[in-house]
Image (tube, rainbow, N blue to C red; front, side):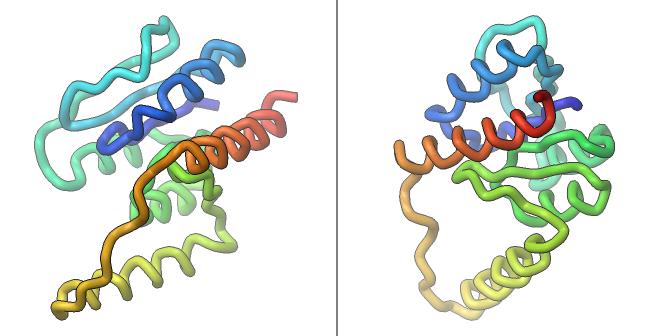
Amino acid sequence: MTLFIDGDAFPNLLKPIVLKAIERLQIKTFVIANKKITVGKSKLIEYLIVDQGADEADHKIVEMVEEHDLVITADIPLADRIISKNAHAIDHRGELYSVENIKQYLTMRNFMQEMRDAGEMTGGPKAFGVKDAQNFANQLNAFLQKKFM
């Protein structure tokens, strides 16, 4: 299994959590973004900077991901593309996307986008906090335990 991190908007609170898991389980990891970001120093992490553009990092991740890989992303359309390749996706708040739930998340995301496009003030997600990081850590550890134990 290879780990891919959608580096655009990757929360700083998650960096030590992910780095610890990468090192502990020796997981080959790619961090892909359109600007330089650092999760930490590790011989297991390769940083790829893609061209500027809304979905350039997403396209690169989809191109590289293989069945059973894991992608960390808050981008629901990207998660949908990952799931369709029989890989796994988890968001920054610990939601593990699956064949069973990804279409529901995508439908809700698209509905909210239509509301915003129509001028509705829907507000954004709540601020990312320590509880979100803990939920992510718990879900990541549970997923990795199934994969590596």
